[in-house]
Amino acid sequence: MVKRNACIFISGKGSNLKSLIKNSRNHNFPISIKLIISNNTNAKGIWLAKVNSIPYLIINTKNRNFENLILNKVKKYKISIICLAGYMKMISKKFINNFGKTIVNIHPSLLPKFKGLNTFERVLKYKEKKTGCSVHFVNKKLDNGKVITQKSFFVEKNDSVKILKEKTQKLELFAYPEAIIKIYRNN
Ligand code: GRF
Image 1 (cartoon, protein in one colour):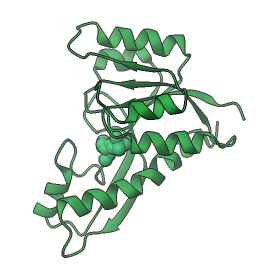
Image 2 (tube, protein in one colour):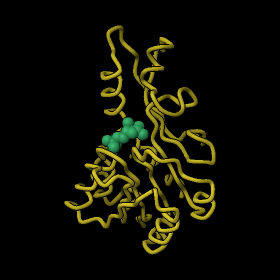
Image 3 (tube, helix red, strand yellow):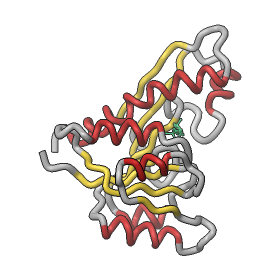
Image 4 (cartoon, helix red, strand yellow):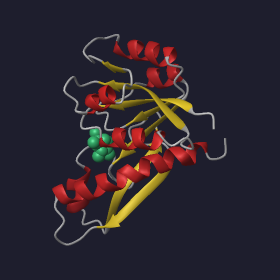
């Protein structure tokens, strides 16, 4: 299988990154991770780039030119898909246009419900019966692109924000690889 070059954007722990790295070792998995980008110098996920010898770039989003720096790098590595994995910064419309290829994101709710931040608090507030995670294409509106894969579970009586987060993040580790496979299934 011809693997597509992928770049993963992170800001924090990198559990989704870890799962994507693990899956990409399988020769049938459609992407190969060529580059990791973090907007946070202290992101634990950077360690995963180091131990797996994957090139990485730490960007300073206070630099007005930071998106151009990213674009140059993704061009250099011939990236054809960007996976946002806990990347806590909005991607600009200009970046989406200039990259011109696939960008996907993972979000901790059953979209279109609860776009944006504090999803677990809102799941409890609105007494949702079910919640979960969604992998979706990124378009110019926040958490608004077409959903590729969702995984859900029933909210239990004693579930707190912390428990909902743990349960959701466990599902994410399966949802992201599944979505990547789905994107390339017929290509
Ligand atoms: C995930 O819960 C994801 O849904 C959200 O940020 C978290 C990332 O966690 N966008 P990690 O960095 O992959 O551990």
